[in-house]
Image 1 (cartoon, helix red, strand yellow):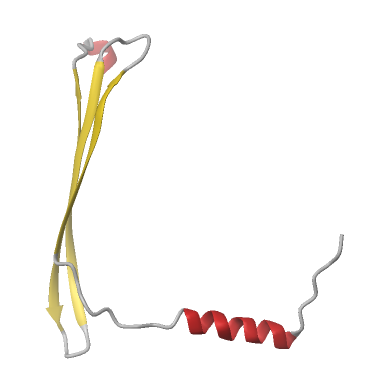
Image 2: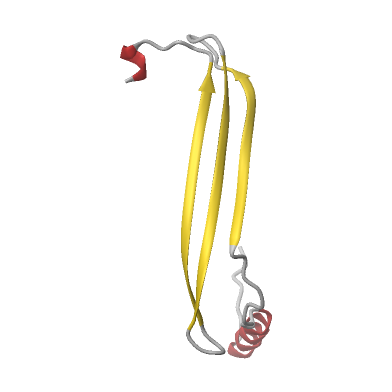
Length: 97
């Protein structure tokens, strides 16, 4: 198998091009409130349990910005996540616990 060799110049130029592509830019906007949800349609549970179930969930984020200066913003984030599985199966206490 042929071994690859790179000169220091090629590695330097590769690094320069990579850094140029990853330039840092300040964020111009901020989402203060976001909400997303998901829904898993009814599915058969499979053996040994018979029945159907579905999953419902939501993710909510609230960002609270605090202006430190004209160029600096500190923000705190509150997140709330809930997931719920609805099923028509009746599980005994031995299985549910």
